[in-house]
Image (tube, rainbow, N blue to C red):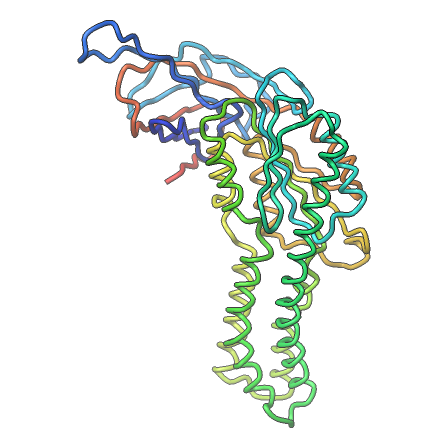
Amino acid sequence: MIFLSFLMAVGVGLVPVPDVWAGPGAPQEQEKDKAGKEDTIEPIRLRLPFRVTEGVYRFKPLSKTDVQLVINDQPWEIKELVEHENSMGKRGELGRSFILSFHVAEYNKKVADAVSYFVTEVLIYSDMLFVITPLHVYRFDVSRNKLKMVSDIETLVKKDIEDFNARRLQVQQELENQVMALRWSINNPYQLPGPVVATIQFSKNFLPAFKNFSREFWLPDIGKFQRVFDFLRLREGERWCIHFQQQDMFDILSGIRKLPPLLKTFFTSEFEMTDVIKSSILTFERELSLMDSYAVQPLLDPIQGANFNFNTIYFGSHAQTTAASGNTESFYLENILNQTSLHTGGKVVNSADPLEGMREIIGHKDHYHEVLFDFNGDIEEKNIKISIEGSKTKPSFKE
């Protein structure tokens, strides 16, 4: 059985939670009939979108009898179950909102071609486009002169990426200098400060700096997405996001992961493994493992709550491919982006050619359902659950 738990709040619609997720089209309230007694609350019809992301019903057709609706622990009548299928390439609804976000080290010709294709083949005059770079958020009204629009996007994104990279490379170099200093002490054990002191100092100084680096440069800036969501709070229509993620941005990571086994081997063979050294190495290993366990919710919850369909295009560097460098983006970031795409009805594409990835995403069909039901009470702070018979998916709820 699959369960859903939703928190209903006046003015913000229905906020969904894991396992079955909200889809495009925020729930709509019908206006109450003002003619009648002031103390009577007339029923209103609500539309609750959801997705099945796991279990047999992810690919199996649903009927109204398969779905059970519970409000505040009471069974509730479902008036209608509506099935929807939508795609970015289908121009059926006016007032669409789009986000192009870039977490990349360079805006090369392949990325530019993908953006150009999106602007010329997807956007129409009634759409609104937001561009999120590592540094800023830009809003574009779609104009007839799309070539100028493409050029403006390229100019802004390139400039921001250059500034972002300058700061990133400076901080990364400072981290690499600490790593090199530790390696030097290991290779020269009888020169000051010595490997024991160097290891203790490294664990104390490097980890806080590395965590700050991770937060600032590895994760997309969720606050920038939230600014877009706040701006669109009262705007209806479909909402789509395409996120460009360069996979080989951070070659520092593979070198850092080699340090704990190197330290263990060195101290086991050359020096006595003291409790202080053991503690320092274990702390270092633990902090590195935590880098791979960042939660999905900080990115997923606001995107899902704003009813955005999130899509990800992974690609390698123009200068060197991921395969050639042997470096890949941290697993936790891939997991965050993949899960966010899955649970919002989007698509993940891993391609050497971002243009091909863009074509796949534009043609991707988002499949979801809506339950329609009448509600005659105060809709503020109501706990809503949906269960689907026959699914063995473990229930998962948003706290």
